[in-house]
Amino acid sequence: MASAGARVPRLVLVGLGALGGGSAVLLLKPGQKPALPTEPGRSDDALPLVSYSAPDRFSGGIAQPTTKWDSNWDQRAPTSLVEPPKGLSEAELKDHAPYQESLSKAKAKARRHLILIRHGQYQLDGATDEQRVLTELGRQQAALTGAQLRRLGLPYTAIIRSSMSRALETSDIIHRELAEAAPPVSTSDLLREGAPIPPEPRLRHWQPGPRRFYEDGPRIEAAFRRFVHRAAPDQERDSYEIVVCHANVIRYFVCRALQLPPEAWLRFSLRHASLTWLTVLPNGRVKLDFMGDAGFMPPEAMTTT
Amino acid sequence: MASAGARVPRLVLVGLGALGGGSAVLLLKPGQKPALPTEPGRSDDALPLVSYSAPDRFSGGIAQPTTKWDSNWDQRAPTSLVEPPKGLSEAELKDHAPYQESLSKAKAKARRHLILIRHGQYQLDGATDEQRVLTELGRQQAALTGAQLRRLGLPYTAIIRSSMSRALETSDIIHRELAEAAPPVSTSDLLREGAPIPPEPRLRHWQPGPRRFYEDGPRIEAAFRRFVHRAAPDQERDSYEIVVCHANVIRYFVCRALQLPPEAWLRFSLRHASLTWLTVLPNGRVKLDFMGDAGFMPPEAMTTT
Image (tube, rainbow over all chains, first blue to last red; front, side, top):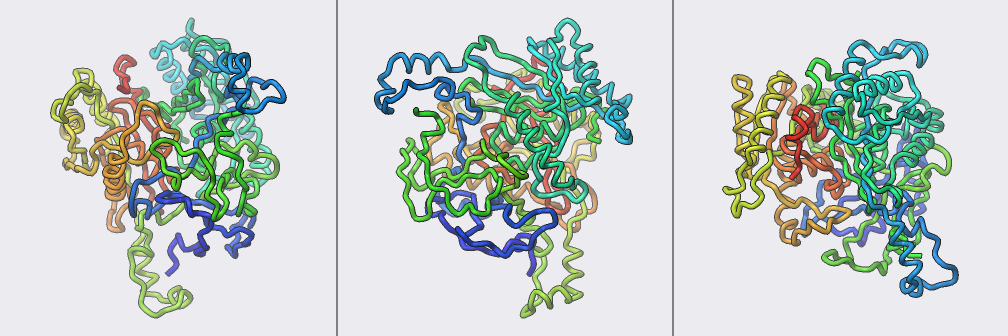
């Protein structure tokens, strides 16, 4: 019986003595090259290892996490910002008052709110980026989103937008709607649309060539590292940054910021000009306040393509 | 230097020859009992294994998925619904016309839209569930959400609600607002609020005892399995089910439905009476259309506690 799950032959479970009631299943044996069917465009040495569908996780006891939150994911924990005095043991460092004081001063104090906005609907049939401008509906969506931001009435600190036409246009309309509440604007090529990492599961109708991933992957990761991180220690007040960019970029940011498997990005959908809100707390925790909020638009303006 | 990441001693990486540019890092050696500090309330044999913070994922090549989508996660793929004729090899089954026809008929045709709604704001100081009724604002939120559903104008097929007071009350207000568009209502104890799985990272101000997880975990998992799955093969039309329940339940459902590590549920936030939309496609794929949409409310009605 060839069930979908049986495509991956049953492999010996190894190294999971400590797994307990956890959900991760390791499918490879150390040193073993498994005889899995090679999928087109996917090489043998990049096989998925873990599944979180976890049908037997509740056979007994309390289900336990099998993944670990990395609290220094952005390399901005105080210990990453302050160089310790040389030649001291960990115990000595603990008693080293000036070092401990520097660590304490290197703690972030403020929250960073990142308001990620997908551009409005655009002309899909344009040959160049310049021709892929917003549709009439796309301009309305951008205006509705700008009006919603104005209604929220927050002390916005920056608008950062991708350099693609549809993002520039969306950002300009939002800026206009914000009127006197509009913060300074900057533009980044890092935020342009692209293919961040091959999605899992893969989609039949979206299969970019390997070169797209090769080029876009590290560039979108670089965008993540540039724009998503905890506040600097000298940031006194919570910031509210508006980032106008693209569906793939935003979905990848959400997975990375929440430390979810990044290949899950295509399981999320995003409506045009919708709001996605990430908050980075001073201790490095990240929460997703909401994703793809377009509830302020009339239903006929809610589109994804 | 004691960085946050250094809390977990560096362990030998094993069994990862096939990992390539992937992001998962296995922290345990087979058979090795690692000398990690035991955190309070967490036993040694339930240690987290994997981190997706992935600082070196882009050192070369194309980043590749390290997790696998389980397309039969709900045990409703045709091969799970149809018993194969006995005593035949896989090759023989492939040529077995009646079996293949049965499989083909067992394919889902319709989409299941699950509209998950958190209850409105409620009296936190009530001693019993019956006393934790909606606040005046909570009733307004529920009415706004009902009005938004009516505005969306979809052919709603069911309202299913948790049996807790605040969910019943929210659901009744939504039902009233939907007026003639209101579908049949049912109530489930499985959907009551609870502690699904210890969150990672843990929160200082939310530390339920082990018994909460022990009792609530499998019950909320049972709710997931009862309400979240692909359509039955005989479902002809897309369904639109309104599920009125609770923040923890909804966040856990989202993680489970998207096959994300379930312990990530507390990285998501949910506003009162907000809409979270999951679509289960006929092939078992799941997409999150949006999460925590409350954009249709005036800003002063947007609350989480």
